[in-house]
Image 1 (cartoon, helix red, strand yellow):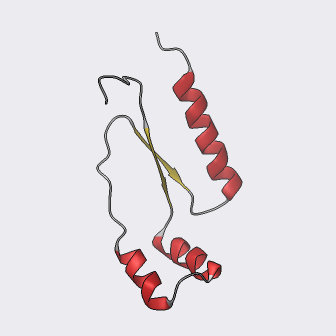
Image 2 (cartoon, one colour; image 1 turned 180 degrees about the vertical axis):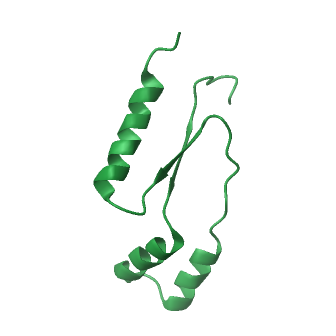
Image 3 (tube, one colour; image 1 turned 90 degrees about the vertical axis):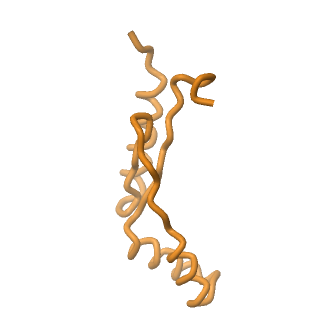
Length: 79
């Protein structure tokens, strides 16, 4: 895949565990034990040069702006 799409990029949207827990609790879609199980399955991802991380722990507009900026940067012509 990387050979076919040389300019590919991985965008990982992350948030702090307590922020994720609070957001999921606020949705009220899962029981406490299901929520704990879901949070326990969070894993770290191996990051490479083509990997960008956007922190979504805070303001949604800031994370959205960071994502748009990343996309714009990725589509700029390379020398």
